[in-house]
Length: 102
Image 1 (cartoon, rainbow, N blue to C red):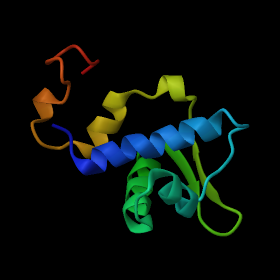
Image 2 (image 1 turned 120 degrees about the horizontal axis):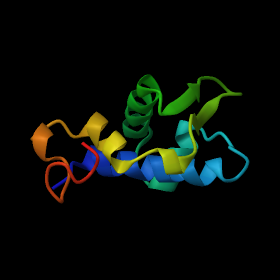
Image 3 (image 1 turned 135 degrees about the vertical axis):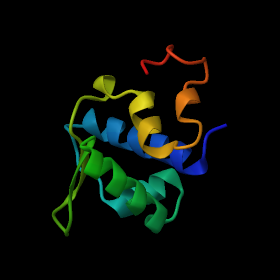
Image 4 (image 1 turned 180 degrees about the horizontal axis):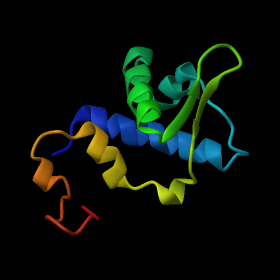
């Protein structure tokens, strides 16, 4: 039902959520790709989309890393699906239109 990219984006957000609760620790794309068991290129593309949307704060370089811009409880699955699920825009919620905050 959902694309692989969306599922990986949810995994990335899960990693960043856990880091948020560990003193808002920043994670590199390499660290996230190891935790998510995915290649760095895919994770980097996902992080770029999340950063451009404002959900994630990203800083490049050796002292950089990625972190959430807001507490995890303020970010919804719908927010992530809205970025990565482009087919059937009216049917992104698995429970039907109007249920998931659309």
